[in-house]
Length: 203
DNA sequence: GTACCGATGCTC
DNA sequence: AGCATCGGTACT
Image (cartoon, rainbow, N blue to C red):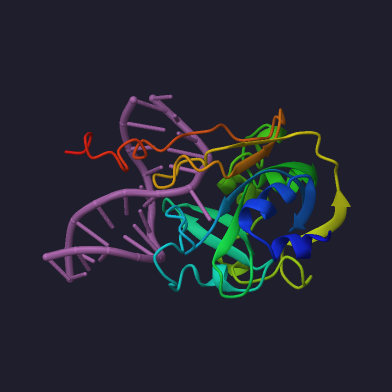
């Protein structure tokens, strides 16, 4: 099954299928080690497209393989790969990877250990030097900055757990990572998550 | 117009 | 454990 076929399907299938795949941009090659699935308007309150289509999330509604790049916390960029049919706002967030080529480019002036260069979604996006200009380009057509390489590593074991930092849908186990891989980012539960859906604790 | 806050990362 | 920092979204 090709990745294009996988990306045409639901995000919770596409997210683990991306593990062990190789992507490259701006002189850096990455082996994907951690991803998260977001289901758009289909009942996933953690998705940026949960409420409706807006100027920001428009790329999530495009063809499978389209990049959705968003600006986070006033200083970071994060990159998603859109999946599902056109018109369905599902996507997979690339959360971490191992830099396997172009380590010096991937550093981008940062004082990080090699294994940390793409450990976390904002670091990963920085390592690949992607930003708003990559939003709306496609991973699969070879014309955008991020390209898919014809290389897949067999993945021994995949772990799954709740998504990092989300306050809504905080218990849906749609975060996937290669078990035991040192480049996987640490899990952090949103401090807001505990209050969501618990009226007794809200005041 | 305005207030709120986050799919984070760095420093203390 | 606390903070930087700003665009998107919702609400007045």
